[in-house]
Image (cartoon, rainbow, N blue to C red):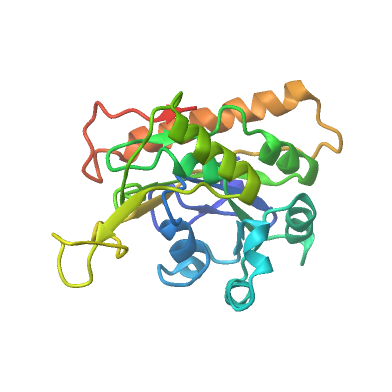
Length: 253
């Protein structure tokens, strides 16, 4: 099928003008800076690297209940991560639609810390089912450095404070993280400004997905497994290029 794709630039960039896509973004980090900059704006030249593809970044539906923030998000083409909204975004204007979902969500932000490569993916399969029902190819995306821009206190998984975080996550939709960055004038002071660390985002080759109106659990599991393997392969291929040791591994939870 290589002739079916048009290769753009180099590395893993592939574009197709007859398909729709679901981009799975990893990791969540604290504020998803890489997802917003790459897919919610033209800061890194997405339209040049992927001509003919229209990205739409999904975020928590609760964000659209807040005035001003709602209008700001909508101005960047960002939409709520609901089943109905995703189906609509994949069906508009025929083809060339790319829905970008931060698969790990708020739960993954609790594992965010420098040098920690953990993705919450093992039991998250809804995006694969939606991809099958829409015939949208799955595309793994990983941002090296997303977890480096803030420092966070990570509590023990079986501790009381982690239980409180999980409870709040279920009630309000996002996890209250205890994190810090740098101050406005110095790296040595505490503040909310992110540390000046680079975030390098790599986009993998699409996984071809057939359109199945009512996919079985077995079919969902097959493509979910293919996605996990593709993401791990993407991480392993680029980790040393962006300054991580060859012994670093991506943990899938």
